[in-house]
Length: 178
Image (cartoon, rainbow, N blue to C red; front, top):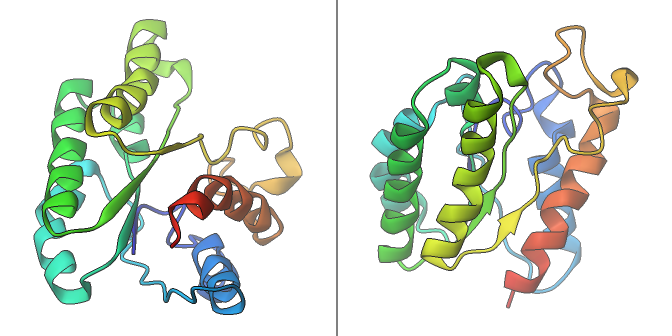
C-alpha cells in the first residue's frame, strides 16, 4: 500500500501512468506477485495521513506500507516536529498492524531558510533510523535539473518522469519483498 501525496496520486496525468500503477504492473510480472493499493491523495499532509492510517490499514491489511508524505507539510512551512510526530504515528501504527514500512525521503526548496530545509530533510533519516525502516531517497532527486520532466507547475513530474520515480522506489523496495 502506498500512502502518499500528489507525487504518488499521479497528479496531472492518467492514474494508470503514475509510478504506483507502474509498480503494480511490475509486481504482477515478478514473484511474489504483490498487489498494490494506492491510498494516496493529492494535497495530503502528514497529519491527514496520520488521521487516515488506522482506517486504511484495517481496510487493506497491507504487508508493506510505502510512506511518501511530507512534501505538503514543507511547502506550507509546518513545524518539522509536528511532521515527525505524524510520520512516527503512521510508522508505529503500520508496524503494529504487522506491515513493514518503507519511508520515502523528501526535500523542499530553501524558501523557509536553510535551517528549516536541513531539519526537514534530516527528519526522514532520523525516523528511518529510530524505527529501523528502509529509507528511499527523495523521489525527484535526479529530476530537478530536468525541467522537461515536470508539468507547467514545476512541482509535479510528467508521465515521462514516472519510470524514474518507480526506479527510486524499486531500489529500496526490492529487498523488502519476500
